[in-house]
Image 1 (tube, helix red, strand yellow):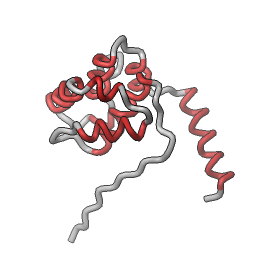
Image 2 (cartoon, rainbow, N blue to C red; image 1 turned 60 degrees about the vertical axis):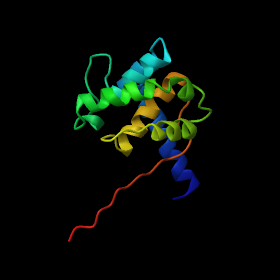
Image 3 (cartoon, rainbow, N blue to C red; image 1 turned 90 degrees about the vertical axis):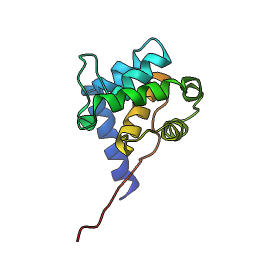
Image 4 (cartoon, rainbow, N blue to C red; image 1 turned 120 degrees about the vertical axis):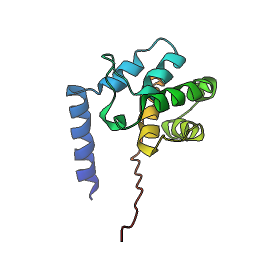
Length: 131
């Protein structure tokens, strides 16, 4: 992919996100404290109480346990200096039942509260061969 084409994709994404902001991210960014932002982010709820489609298969009890566990480490998460740092910290506090997408989405939401955003493309694949 050429640099020009890559830049076109970035510009399209930025324009699209301005027109159609992510309700879960903006809701998290508007919280009054890091603890509130963590809870909203980890439970994947927007201002209407709707769960993000990315986490629809995860049981609410798992998301709430994740939120409580992350809240126990709020001061460390608040010290993140980059999105990559925040994602690594959140991954460190992962609990059983929370996968890669939930970790990334939670980091993106908490990052919005902290004013920290991804500056590179993240890719994760769990490929299982089927015979």
